[in-house]
Amino acid sequence: MIDNDPIVIENVTELLEDFGYRVISTEDSQKGIQMARSDAPDLVVCDILQPVVDGFGVLETLKESADTKDIPFVFLSALDSEVLQ
Image (cartoon, rainbow, N blue to C red):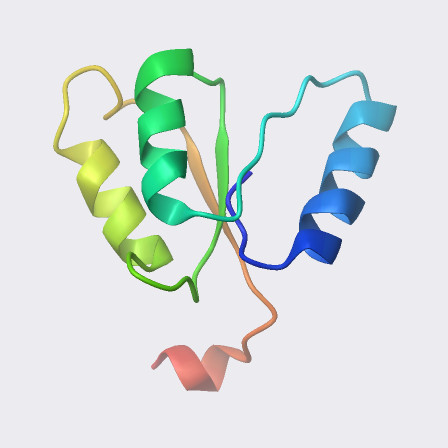
């Protein structure tokens, strides 16, 4: 879970853990990329709006590596779809 809002991390982590998932998280997108490379998660959940490297940059970076290119990736954002167009 990569999100710069600790409250979102806390809420999503609690929800996923209630379903039995182990969650690792960070508020730093660059650290999230490093964690995905070293921990080989089953799924990456990432906010779109991140400082330094946004969610699209995280996805692009992970897709460039053979070790992380096949990890499923889900964007999580409070943005309205019109903002993204």
